[in-house]
Amino acid sequence: MGKGVARLPWRRCNTIALLAAAFGWIAWLGCGDDDALIDPVTARPEVVSSSLAANPNNAISAIVTTSTISAARVRVVIEADGAQVDQTPNFAVTSKTTQVPVLGLQPETDYTLWVAAFSVSGRIAAGDRMPFRTGALPTSITSFEVVTSGGSEPGFTLLAPIFDIGHPAVIVDSKGRVVWYRETPTGVVDFQLQPNGHYTGAVPVPASEPFFPAVYEEWDELGNLIRTWTTPGFELTDSHDIRLTADGTEALLLAYEARTSDLTSVGGPSSATVIGNVLQRVTTGGGVSFEWDAFDHYELEDADDFVWTSPAAGGFDFTHANAIEVEADGDYLLSTRHLSEI
Image 1 (cartoon, rainbow, N blue to C red):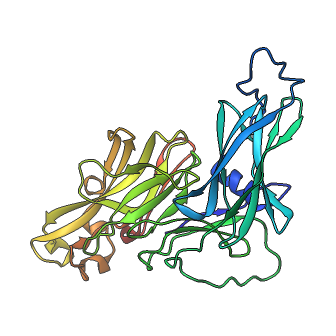
Image 2: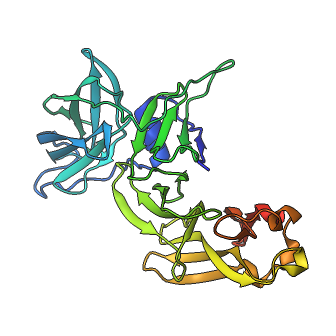
């Protein structure tokens, strides 16, 4: 269920730049909040102060906050063993302080970080050097071995092992090194990069088979929780898939619906619990702008024969929807495994 291989067309294929593209960061060259009496073209930028903090969501990243004068953009330069090893993308200066995420660091490694500030005309100023040591990776991250055949292209892979409950959402680079992760109390089973640049992860909640429910969490590049997504009007949200709109204001989600049905027409009991799926388009405010119920469009006879011969503890798994896709014309594609169709 973990999806996503990011192959990113950067000329300089360093980890920070590639992660920036994956997160949808944009480096603008616009003017910052400079003193109106200072010519922004000729003024020399100044890094007034910089502070460094560990990321509470991720032991291999940091947060740099800097205050500048006459700067249009800033970046953080990363050194290890006395040499520059990487740098973040540029971040536009739009207020007195600018926060720069520093991602993709290696675990238990000593770094030196400093802010580079740029004026509109390209003049540069450097801030004080700040030591930083990353923490260890959590033991909840499953170890794995990477085997390559031939060369490998720069890029990232999103992982969320579905049969290893408790495993966090993980991003690895082309060499198999963990460059980002996000833990939750019960792990993550569906991990995706969404069109708005945020990540979503399905955080499992307890239930009997055939249910595999979750609460979807949405995170920014630092792993901060932006919001949660569930299906209004239904007790359980399906953990198989979620699709956010480009602006992040709505999401396509699947709900579980249980009905009592007569299954004698398919060789089953006269009264049994049958589990179907409902597709919803949900707003950030919890409203439903679209709803499609499989029970209203399929007959029990449409399901594959094996469905009615092997009930799970929670009932007969009628549709078992797996994936949602949005077509160019705005129509929705839904794959239903137990109907063997899209």
